[in-house]
Length: 444
Ligand SMILES: Cc1cc2nc3c(=O)[nH]c(=O)nc-3n(C[C@H](O)[C@H](O)[C@H](O)COP(=O)(O)O)c2cc1C
Image 1: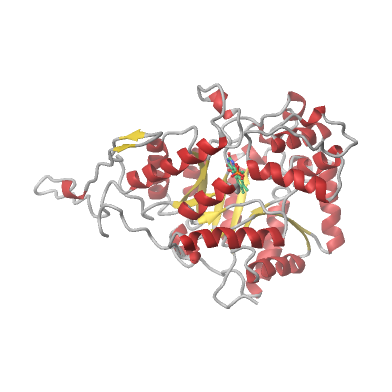
Image 2: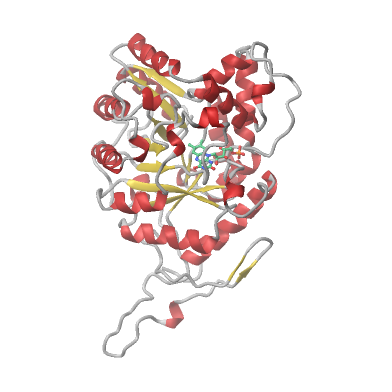
């Protein structure tokens, strides 16, 4: 059993609104959920009533890299730009955290620093930055480049990028803006630091033209799981979204990343590991399984095979669909951990290409499919055995799957003392139990 003060942290994965390619076709689901502001607003308000820690917007900076026959069936083809949406949602909510992806490969650190600082100020200290190196290679084609940067180089640039962004956030001491009306002094120059960064990949003068964020720095989130991804997480992240397939894998990942943190002199508790978890709630376990089966039956094979191609970083439509994956799939520049997970799943369960594709077209990662009680049992076990500190919940379809979680699973978790009944603080940091970072250039 977890100690009484150990509580689950829950984030909601909301862009795309459901990761499942069949979600928009499920009976009574909102087909336009992903791109309907009124729907999204009602969902975030529901999540806030349920006391979720954070609402998370992924971003790939391109439509999915799929053939048209698959893309034309994808509800993700149209969705809001994350910052515009989160700024609007910040005015419709008061406590829930607002986390967006910001790419270290395709964006500039100055842009990222000021956008997140703005969101943090506008939302009263609720912003979080998911540092990604961007998994979709097509983003390069939208942003003036011919090809995606090599995986290792992407991560080296990401590490330098992070240093620049936190340096820019620390441009101003918290009390720099004196606004002395009588003397006509707006800020104290002794409390301004000009970064003047010149590194391997980036050159940024500074200072940032926006005051230090309310949280000091917005909460730093990381999602990669390869060797380089784990190391970046250990060095920088305060929350980690990770794709884990089961509890054994989750525990290994947890021990590895928290161990790396300790070696770097960071306190284990200063990072919350929140694996993505697809949750389907039913009246009985069979009822929940039937819902998932119905949902999986809505996955078109074109999307299934395209999802497998994305995971492998290689065109899977060329493989014999009725044979297992070949042994010699060429190396790729795609995300490493997703590719390894897909190959391992196919081998472990001896799946044909067709079966494996069908699994990936739905959701092939960690899933909890059952009653509120069995789902709470599983979450409790993950928390108690250091599989995770909580979850990034993925809903199977909207709004029904989200309502089921908020109305039925959250009260069960609260009854067991595993989840808060009210927010502990005003900022995302306070709610996640994370310290406010000191300014690197000025003692707070
Ligand atoms: C919950 C979750 C959210 C993610 N969000 C994004 C995202 O918004 N944009 C993106 O390019 N990649 C996203 N990813 C993918 C990761 O950034 C990363 O590419 C992937 O986990 C593999 O990383 P690796 O190459 O370090 O193994 C996400 C992954 C997970 C598990």
